Length: 106
Image 1 (cartoon, rainbow, N blue to C red):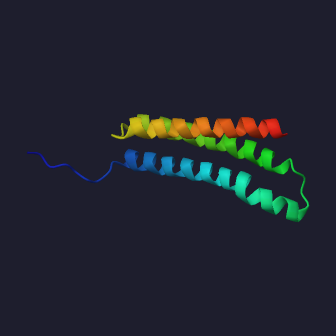
Image 2: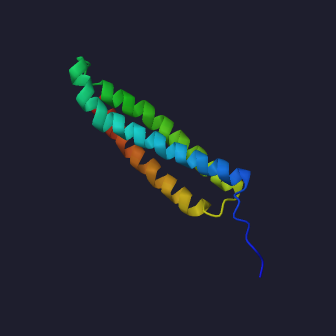
Image 3: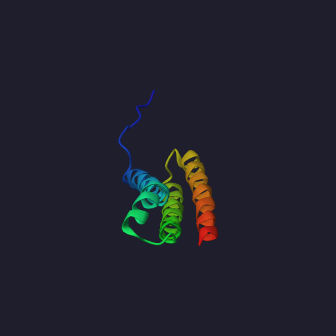
C-alpha cells in the first residue's frame, strides 16, 4: 500500500486560489449590482444607468476570471479539474444572463 502525499502541488494551490478569486469577483458583481447599488445610488442621486454599467463591467471581469480559473485548473492537472470547470462554466452562464439583462436595462 502506498502513502498519499496530502501536500498540494504549487500549481494546484495556485489553481485553487484563482478559483476562489473568480468566485469572489462574481459574488461582488452580484452584490453590487443587485443589493448595494439599488439602495445606494438613489440615496446619492445617481442615475439609474449606474447599476447596469457596473454590472456589465464587473460581469466581464468575472467571466474572464472564471475562464482563467478553468485554464489554470486544466494546466495544473488538478484532480478536481472537471467538477471545478463545470462549476466555473455554470457561473459563466449565470453571469452572461445577468450581463444580457443589464444590457437590456440600458
